[in-house]
Amino acid sequence: MVSAYILILTEVGKAAEVAAAVAEIPGVKAADDVTGPYDVVVRAEAKDMDELGRLVVARVQSIEGIDRTLTCPVVHL
Image 1: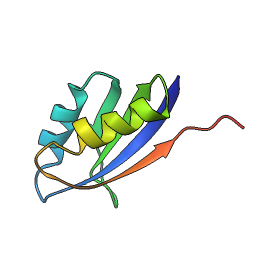
Image 2: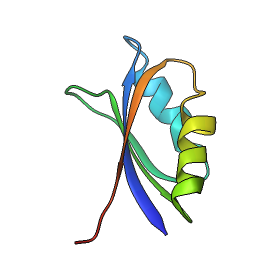
Image 3: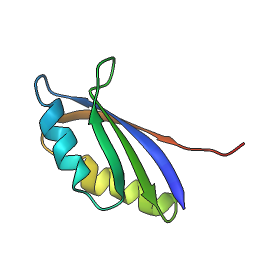
């Protein structure tokens, strides 16, 4: 299992809508609108890196109101 944080920059005023839409995607464990340089922080899980990539590119990035994403896979050192 692969976990990642997805940091999302949204259009102005769209953070709550984007967080709600992302929260409905299978594999998303949490989606919160936040303050700071990003507008939404998502915690996602997938069976492998390929599936995680498909989740981000095909599902998350297709949501209206998203300007940019940054995916940060969790590592266990």
